[in-house]
Image (tube, rainbow, N blue to C red; front, side):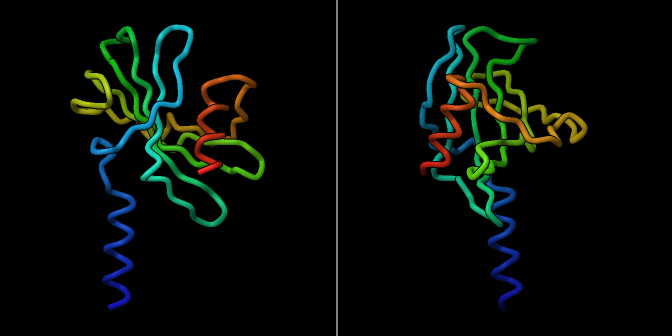
Length: 128
């Protein structure tokens, strides 16, 4: 019974679709791109925080209008890794996403620049 509950919980966390997310705006860049996080899907595991972020582009980049990121955060040291991301032809992560191969994800920790969208996002995620 415990194994069934664990399997169900694990598959819900791993395979839940961020397309049904409740995106909360974090801010806009000078270019007009808007960044969002899904505060309802934030997960904590072994001292790390995991969350979905969405970048809605004002102008298409290579035909894409939005990018979804799945990130791991170390709130103690205020750093992050991007575990996966996908490119979407429509705003707000709609449309079929082209997932970047695992060779394109970050293996090293990144520290957000002061006054950047990454810094604002990490503050929001770590304070939630």
